[in-house]
View: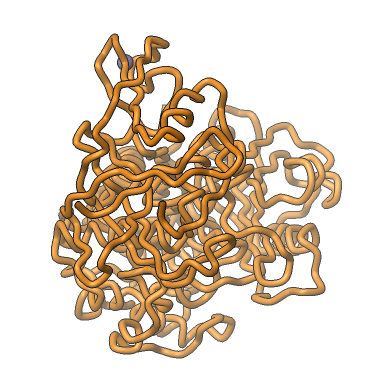
Length: 135
Length: 390
Ligand SMILES: [Zn+2]
């Protein structure tokens, strides 16, 4: 668990399996059995070939920082969380995922740095937020 | 079919206000509509097409047609792509005019982000957006997302904060000649890079201004343009594009301009080298840098060098840009800079920009708009405009 806020995401029943897995601390990625695409953000169909044959494949949650920013002035529920890191993480499976980097040394944070998934439980929901920490 | 020359911009108007606590959203729309029609030498009674985006008051274009008193709308379009909407409207109006659907199209923008309590940007109903649970929950901000693009551009191409600052400096040098500019004082590179970091690597002065206000355009059939006393501006080319995450393959160093730009240039039959003046969407300095590359004014990655040493400063820089001071210094009404981009391009082509920044013999101009975020999903629109016969 990080110290960042855990606002409740809207849960689309069609991708509830993603959120349930996250609540168990597992990252599953929507994968098309027709064309092989692993896509992001999750949908119950393939944005390349429109197939509904999506399976949820287990991911180790490893990747590297594609880009990042240190937000100095948070807004809304993040008002008291500054500074915090917003980043795109490129998963080893391919997709670039928007998230936060937690438990990081802000002085040495860098593009290309290896990171790994961590999950912050959303209170009273069968869901958790995917975040990353340096490895 | 092409829209090349199929329509002219006959009237433009930029609201003089930047802080309008006592003027309603609907009234600002009305004031800019009447202003643009007067500029063209037309009246509300001449209008047969109305175009607006998500900033319109009430129910799409319906409420406003009633409010202003447009009684004979034969064509309407409420395309909503954030700040780029109004450039898309020009293209759509030209296509509708070419198809014989209408003859006099009115396009309006207004907003009160300073005093009206309307949320910035134009992201529509964000809570139903499918990406909401995968982005907004992480504390995204408009500037934070653009910062992600800037950081990646710096990493791949060695772009520096000082180079980004050159863009703000150029805009401020232009704004000093605009008595209505929200930030009328020139700034230096040092002042930009020493202003507070809001979201690394972007500083407070890498950002546009937040202003109440608005603007309007009147686009007409060439036969109507011919009968008007006013100098009208032919629309030579239009391109639009939607760029998005692409299932997770997003490239933060490119914008939708890399698709909309070539479409507009091809329709106009010109190249970036032919362009005398460019209005470039400038929500942030990085928006300008990436767009200049994507439109083909320089190679990808060379934007930092291109904008340096006064490259964007009118009248004699490599590419005179945003001579009104742009969204960075003059006006960014409703948090949407597309309308004012067209207005200043028309001023340049008419020879009516401020004398200190008027580009000599300005014959061809580009106006480019961006809506949404260059770090997630955006609507891009490019117009190529000609001088026509004054
Ligand atoms: Zn597929």
